[in-house]
Image 1 (tube, rainbow, N blue to C red):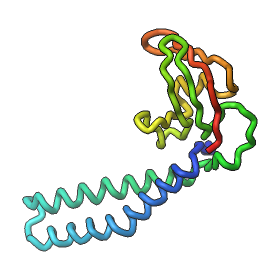
Image 2: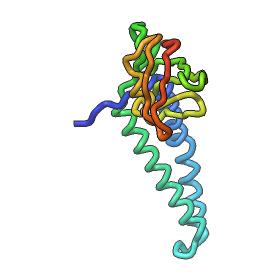
Image 3: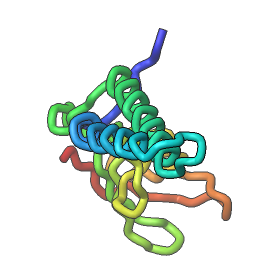
Length: 159
């Protein structure tokens, strides 16, 4: 029995687009380069052939990985969520660090979508786990390598 993995609608669309690219554009190019390298003769000493085969194997592995992720995805559209005011998967939350006054903005997304530079944090991250269920005005305590950090929820958005 496989468990469903949460993924935002945007994340699923990006994964589907990469899958389409790898299957319909990249795969034929790699197969053509394997065939071309094979035509050069002795395969034991043909570096082009081995490189092309390795690239083919990597691409096929990535295709399989993406298909598995999409088949186990529970796709959640933040626009369709009930506006309860609580922090939950796919919501965007604006925070203030109680100690430094630093303002932060994160969207809680699936594991594969996380990109801290874009303000996307994994639902499994310590910050997200501390924020889930909080509402505006609540303070979440997050254990970090430098100690406990207190983050006040300023705003919860359902984008």
